[in-house]
Structure formats: structure tokens, C-alpha cells
Length: 55
Image (cartoon, rainbow, N blue to C red; front, side, top):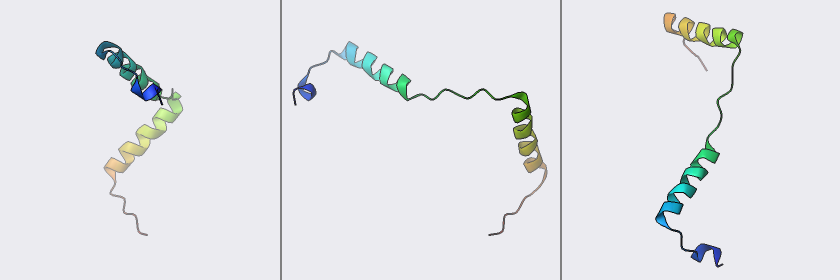
């Protein structure tokens, strides 16, 4: 009950918000060269060809 009634200095509030945002960030995975080449091929192949999906 009293936790929500605390007063926080604006400077401290900014720091707390920055820390919370940093916690929400997701670290990008490190991909192997072969996986990157697969992605590159798929992207380039899809740009060269018009694929139509029928469902």
C-alpha cells in the first residue's frame, strides 16, 4: 500500500525508467555464417521470383 505512495525525485525516476527499459531489451542472437548465407539466399531468391501462396 505504501509503496505506491512513495515520492521519487525526477532525476531518480529517469534513471529507474532507463534501467527498466534496458531490462526489456533482448540481446540479438549471434548467427553462424552458414545461417546468414541461408537467409541471404532466401531473401535474394524471393526478390527474383514472384511466389504465389495458394491456401
